[in-house]
Image 1 (cartoon, rainbow, N blue to C red):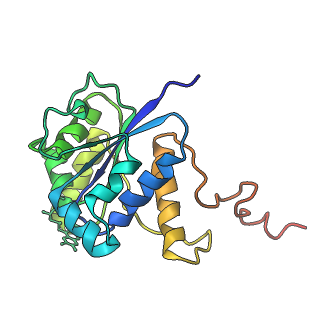
Image 2 (image 1 turned 30 degrees about the vertical axis):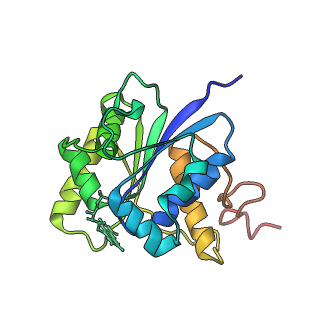
Length: 202
Ligand SMILES: Cc1cc2nc3c(=O)[nH]c(=O)nc-3n(C[C@H](O)[C@H](O)[C@H](O)COP(=O)(O)O)c2cc1C
């Protein structure tokens, strides 16, 4: 039997709380995955403003919900064997904290642990436009080994709804953790979208 993979999902106060919510929903369908959730205070605001949800509504979607101020939570330690972490959406504030090692809350500490333990850290950074300071932060994070994953929509799968756009981004974030959930069509795969050239073939 496959070893259960522990995945940390963090939701911060950038716009796009729906990405965090949908990741949790998708991970419920994944086999042998144990989800640990942490949300910032600002995330609670965006969750209410954008999704009409309260933090407590997400609790059933996670194995454990950790308080953002609980620096003693299991996910704050490298000895807690986690597979990887996705911060979605990731605010510029959180990205800057992770980039500089200012690990004064559980999101930045858990992310720092991922980097130091050479585990996968996916940051769905959402802000636009980006100034030079933002870009410097993201460059620094990429150099530290983080996957910089702005949730930029793709259109090659011809999404017909916001949900389809969100699902495709979430699927690709999970791909980074090697968790395969076919939440959207994949280019060139059976049941997906034919690659260019193949579509025109008889
Ligand atoms: C409705 C709303 C939308 C926001 N959107 C963004 C955003 O897209 N990107 C961002 O970096 N900050 C955004 N912010 C600001 C962050 O919430 C703010 O910087 C906060 O301090 C982030 O804290 P956190 O990193 O602890 O979640 C938004 C705030 C609100 C209220």
